[in-house]
Image (cartoon, rainbow, N blue to C red; front, side, top):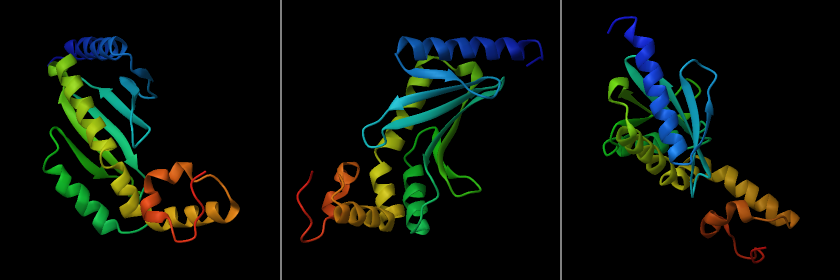
Length: 177
């Protein structure tokens, strides 16, 4: 690819991404880097799935933060994610230097169209939302139990932990508020 076609290709691909996002009613904004578009997918378990698309002449990277560095059971968390990588088309779970977990992949920019975007964002959504609760239990159970106990002791709402009630509730806890 020549230098002259690189910027043109990036502009065409960026326009295609923006068109796709607008047409599908997805929330998006320009990112802090040249060629970056940041969008938000709605989730059920993970309420918001933020995705960065970074359009470059040769490829467009797809990156989404999943969870921060687990507090505990690192080996179990990473083993779980590595096993899931075997079934994950086009993206993979990865960790950064701080141990935070991301989904990461690349699409050739010259192949970027509505179909490829739909596939990639579908994989990001599925790979983030379906594993989120399991990752919280594997990597943050002790913190969740402490928060549950603190909320119960103070009579506070446990609504944000309701999905985990069956794991956290102890004999003598009051009924849900």
